[in-house]
Length: 223
Image (cartoon, rainbow, N blue to C red; front, top):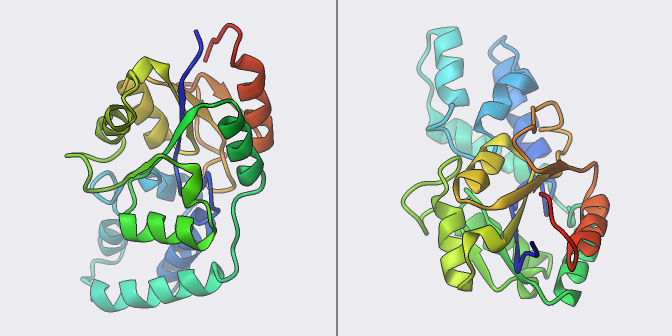
């Protein structure tokens, strides 16, 4: 069955923001004599700290309470400094061009804020590739709940089973599946160790994913 829309996660799919965020958190933990392994940190990737919180985890490890307002501000400065000059994820522009050429509807669906996502899309001149952007606050719950993806389908006036989702996190994959959508995973250096067996297909790059979209569209679809 063909799909009519491709819904892209943002962080880690369109822009490689997740590595800088993880590194900033890792330095925070190391400053207090604790490690933050990737396999622990990835619990919150694609969702928020209600799923799993590095703040709560560090306080549990140290037995201390922190001034998170100050620490958050410094960590955000570090993240933005590391992301200075960052461009789209390798293959992102080409993948979007391929999807557009097929006449498919597109949207960004992210658990991050509009301020973060829309700001990056505008900065990288990617806004025009998408019919809509659905972010935190646009639906009652964020990923791994299906609400954001369901909202995106409503906005596009397309049934959920006609949507293909491109995700890099397990929380995102589970959200798309719960929404009744097909979902493919393109892991990055933060999420590559996760078990993506719930995804229909897993690719090493957006280039591979785009090629598969071109091949699958117009033929039988098994995602």
